[in-house]
Image 1 (cartoon, rainbow, N blue to C red):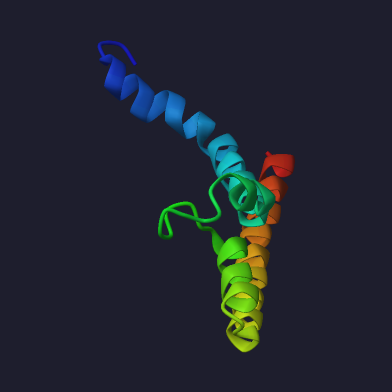
Image 2: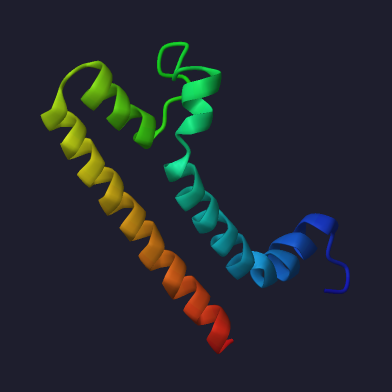
Length: 100
């Protein structure tokens, strides 16, 4: 710690102490962003192109707007699987924070 510059203090002291909190924030934001649909539909309609499209809006666009119900259903299943994987990692991270 003595003689360390600002970058080394951040890298070896501050960042390791913040790692769990950063992990939890990233996982919670991922789950929230998977569920955003209305904001995208109302403001941009998913465009221009696919610039503001997320998984939920892509499932809607595929299933409803393109009349491809099978692909929309498959996309919905994939979205649920991804959300469950993120939720599992979140539960593990929160469990580690409770133990520490």
